[in-house]
Length: 379
Image (cartoon, rainbow, N blue to C red; front, side):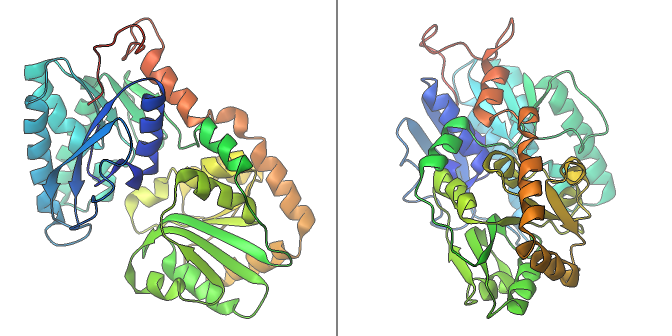
């Protein structure tokens, strides 16, 4: 597995994929990028049967040098794939990992699985001519990989025969374990929940404004995950906010059972945010919990149509406050929303089931069962 993150657990989608591969009997070698010093240690090799190695250090997440480091990352990936055994199998997160791996595979006959969780041309701001080139190369990579896994089709104005839908839903084992995990709901308090990355473009300024308005009233915001910026730092210090750093996936899922409403916000100024495919939406379906999403997110339309979520404009905190106050005093409306979002479950396979079907099913599966072929390895 190759991904521009310091450890697999840093990215929920990667961790779920790793769990499936490990449960299927594979050992994993992971090549990652440590953007900030010390991110990988001591967690790089804490999961049994996963051997991790950092192949690039530095660059940060939003510094002036980050774009340059993406080029370095692609060079590192190219030479790392080139140095691996012939006909190896690589699961690559993002175009920045898959493209150089595909070039190297021309010499090694490796199989490249392209997991396009966040389309690179939509998350990095580049001059239009360069961005157009990247978009054409993304299309090429889609056709040349053994499979192109995507969380949704809305981000693409073209189709490839290699595309396979892998929605951001919880693994069945995690969902079932979360149901048995201790969870306590606070009485007479309307609890909001936000998890994952909560930064300047992921709702932190909005949540800060909202919770300041609700201070001293029976409202609470539970935050689990990471964030950045002044708004996030102020948010987690408010008396009506309970903040925790990253926790195991099962604990993050169990926290849904302690909440009444989930907040999922994506600043529409960022192109890919208008086509968000949130892990939290899949979690809400399985935990039967309604969510709020800002109205500019086009991919939330099916959820809105179902009645399982609510929507206001990103910067309209007045509307968000009014919505939260209304729902806190409308148990029938909340019960209806919980029922409607749970009805979407048949359209959202558990992540592990969908991932296994992509890897192991069909007349020419990408991977063979470990029991049938003990020689195959996941890189």
